[in-house]
Length: 265
Ligand SMILES: C=C(O[C@@H]1C=C(C(=O)O)C=C[C@H]1O)C(=O)O
Image 1 (cartoon, rainbow, N blue to C red):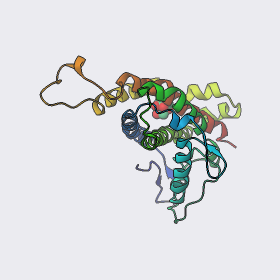
Image 2 (image 1 turned 120 degrees about the horizontal axis):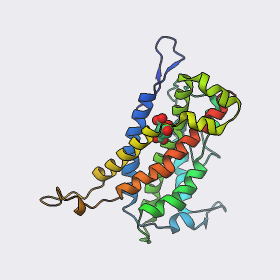
Image 3 (image 1 turned 135 degrees about the vertical axis):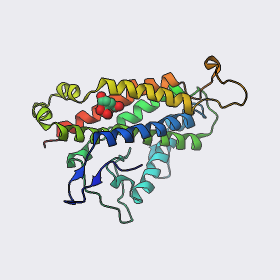
């Protein structure tokens, strides 16, 4: 994923921030999210993978999926994944540092950005509310592949939602005189109003619906073209759009507010 903050070659310490670039990245991330939902929809719910806890060799309890995510995050941390502010781990404890030297970008975010991590909420919403909406019920026993697909979805959703920190930073820098009084008053409602662009949100939802139609259609030769009613989709496009409207956009805005509340600390 291209980085949205370029180092300013003049001073070497400030950053060139642009809402257009950030929105471009969010648009590209829609592709990743829609594809990850389509991939996950190959498998049924397979709830024993994430609901049943088993005792591990270590004596602690974990579901297969939680174990898989924890272990994957550790190896990804060792190659530097969480040195990037757009990546936030699901299991914060015991996250190791990179064992390789990492490229140090000047930080575009306020240091308090590190304390904004809503992955616990994302985890619960994903397994309890979202997953049952877009996968078929049932259990085919293919838990390892299911857990890998769940991780791909969780990471794509988390990245998109925590991008709210960058969105908030650029909005703040564009109009500090508007944001500062609301931040000093710790007024969540006023901040929410300031950062909301309903027209942009409507466009996002429509585009996601179209992407789910395009990426998830059954491709056939010599039939199906021109007859919209016969088209079959791997993930219901209206549902993909609803997932954005009811969960992803509100959670992104929650991250924006949480970040802004700390912006003057
Ligand atoms: C992300 C932004 O902030 C808000 C959240 C949006 C989203 O999550 O897609 C869209 C518009 C804004 O209401 C933005 O302005 O682009």
